Image (cartoon, rainbow, N blue to C red; front, side, top):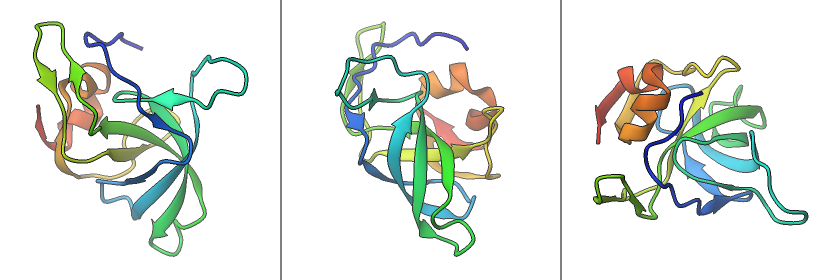
Length: 132
């Protein structure tokens, strides 16, 4: 997996509720874990833009509710700094559901995604409304 060019502040943790911005059938997800997180004992995993989380679907289509899925974080409220000095933040936290091959489950993403997502996950950026 390609490294990120920005220093992402990781402010989301287990227990975070986030909207799903794709058309996969899930509306709200609940973060229950993080993939590839190496932390300290008894400290909850912290994630930010570009991280993949394990989540449970809380609201959505009846066949999606209570399913455990993988989700990619594409937007976060907390600002982060890019290598060129600009600071970026979004008005909401948002995720997109992905499969085991890190390909998007849905066919359309409502709203924009961060440029860091386009660098690391080009298939997700291809179906988004825009890249910031």
